[in-house]
Image (cartoon, helix red, strand yellow):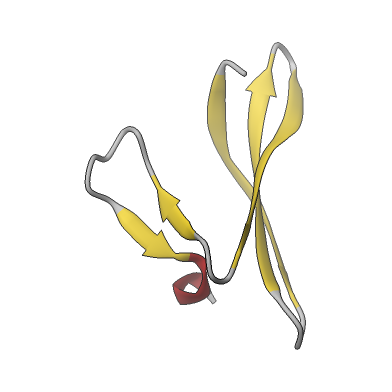
Length: 57
């Protein structure tokens, strides 16, 4: 994939919290990662940045 986009899909229910991260490949968005509430969100562009997905909700 060329790069990750800022487009995310947030889904929540009483069972789980999930963030889907999409990357752009040519002119099409493709699923790059699925993160759940216990996963940590990081960034290659911001060294040292991390955030638990559960903190987003």
